[in-house]
Image (tube, rainbow, N blue to C red):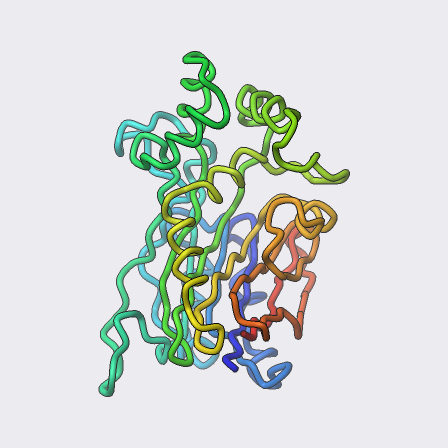
Length: 310
């Protein structure tokens, strides 16, 4: 079965010795890989939009020699001029991601090695672009026009996940890194979602110690057309050669909240504080283990890695 190690970190910027901290941890793991699984993908949240010490470190041998030089960092949200989304939250923050050169991107390639990969893309959670998501809001959550406008406008200001489709061991790896918004930035929408969830027959009550994450953000993600299509595609595959979804990043949510079978009930995962690595596959052999968490001077987030086997 494939074993795919992911490493993720929210360093809160790229200043100071952050690049060296990340380099040391990737090197430490790859020199003696737990379970035999070297790091395949490194995903960073809250990188600096203009680049910095971490993006520079990712271009230096020997530790990052087997990895692609990261493409220009991707804003955690669109700039105000793009698609007229308006002012978002934390516009100077960015995703930064690199991965091993031997990771092929679909369609499957035979030798020679695959061509340079395309830039990862922000995953669409805009109800004005996603008809299915718009329908979920307007028919499931509320029919009140004013409430709909609040939900749509807030959805367009949120941070979206970064999505990359890899091939590993002959199977699709749907990889997301995500820095989930704080609920406090979208209080009107959070109130509407709380009211909707309190209705009979809706989602289970929110578990205690959920954390500061926006519940609305998770619901947008899981009800988006793109996510539903991926889940449906995986569930139609034979479990012996099925693909996998991996979500890694600062989800701003506690252990109790994420693993209490409330939001990602089908997923397995590991976490350290608010940083998570979650995975789903119809494969009966799915597991997430060989966890490594390294504390750094740049708190509150540790560098987290884990191996996904399926």
